[in-house]
Length: 407
Image (cartoon, rainbow, N blue to C red; front, side, top):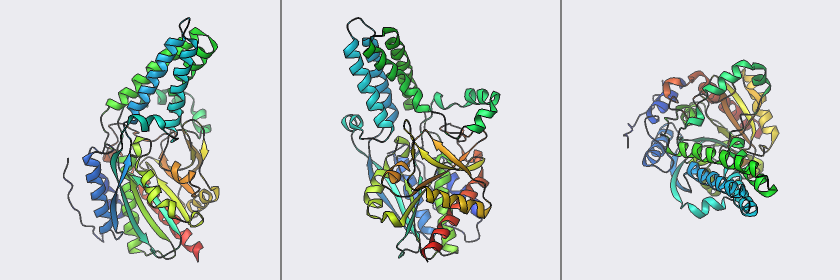
């Protein structure tokens, strides 16, 4: 475990200095979900938020991890089902095996009931940081979300081939406002294995088996991959929380309570957010609570994600809240692309499903992708700090607009 120095905030420090301080302090830690370094990071963040004027606590939450290994095993099961379905007498059994694996895979990736995960993985500890600032007696609450764990890398995250293709068809890049369907690729093999087995089309079943085996190898590679520094994803958001705490200390906010929350185990397809929602968000008034998720804001330009879904797109609850953010951005002169939707999952999915107005602010590059996403190059020196500062300014302006409307 790395040792983190205790740093005392300087009232004269610039916002960008705060952002750099936080990101550079935490990036050297290998913050895998549930690891000692993730725990150390959570305590450092809590101390730093408290020093910035937002008293914070570290709360233990439970999660069931190793998502990539779980998905690899389900894809492997689908490969077996397709192979069985490609035999003369294996049609029915192959369809059952592949279809069950496909259904469990879709359920797990989409934050469903997750019976397979619950059956094969024991609960482990992760750590959430919860701080409060603003008007702590106010009836209305803005929750600003981040996460401090870091992801495994894998060959599938190398963007070079996709960028070469997109460079040849720039018009498609401009028209496309939904991220690439990573999870659809994972589902093609199991789906073909199921359909081929059920219909008796042995060639289709065999093709599904081969593609499922490839998916299993891809996810196994992610499971074995090193932990990336995670400077952009998502220490940029953690740093934003600290910068917001300092902003509200220096320019007090009346009429709105602000919770600054950094969750653990987000990279396990959502972990700590479940504990936070159960302990805190469930008790809040849905009519007087908003959730703003800051996610990977160290790229070239800001964008507002309107919804997400690995397989079925779910727009976030309450479009008026997203419109408010867009209007504030226009008023403040902050460039913010609207209409983006994600085929990956974030911690926003849980608050949105609870009926809490939710939005996610991200940053995108010229390909409308996240910079250095799940790559070893996700380091502090590759963060675009002016964009992070813009995200902080936007979050502060949104909070002040909500506070003004409380009057």
